Picture 1 (tube, rainbow, N blue to C red):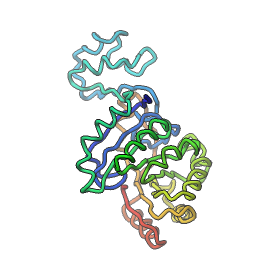
Picture 2 (tube, one colour):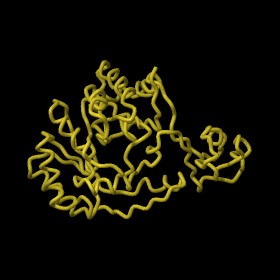
Picture 3 (cartoon, rainbow, N blue to C red):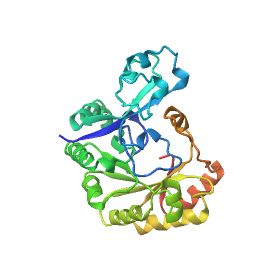
Length: 294
């Protein structure tokens, strides 16, 4: 039975696909977006988050760690990510990000929320990280959800071989397709990868009958210009996309970088509310549906 590394299953979400949703967060991503709000999603393996403000200095993590590391040694070269420190932390200062799960285990979590899907037009959304890094698992899970008539969406960067991506997409009711910037050089600078494959797969999706929504992380002076917005509108129309979600930049994930021992170095900022409204009106006037915040 196939497995995937899941770092969270969020219940009762009101975003990412419509209605009340259960969000399955897959661990591992081929992009390294400088503004990523889920840095614990990037690496495919298990990681430990250390929330320093919760630590009471009891020393139990070091006492129980096979390497004798303690909380300050998590995610270092000697750390084996064995979970023992987090399991013995009485103040919950240590949290494991990443659990290898089978499809039946994920389904058991989802089944707890099925009663809410019907009256709210909700369902399940695959997110991450990048679900397509676990495309076989995601395809099997999506197929099972489809057989149960559970609305299924996927939030994706589109950065995967088309054949693998389609194995998942064909079982999804909705594809939330992230497009950061259209200029290839800027895209590589901000995410670590070229956007040619992403745009190619977006064009291939246009040849299917799938519902696709473009999602744009809106960052001041990077992709919030009138010219850039016009180019996004043109791309959406070219690919028969009827809706765009604008996601203004935020730093909600910043504390997680410290918890992982990483530096948050991105200097971006959110456009003003007035400017977001201006872009929203421009998109609406082009005949497309637009929402702010997803």
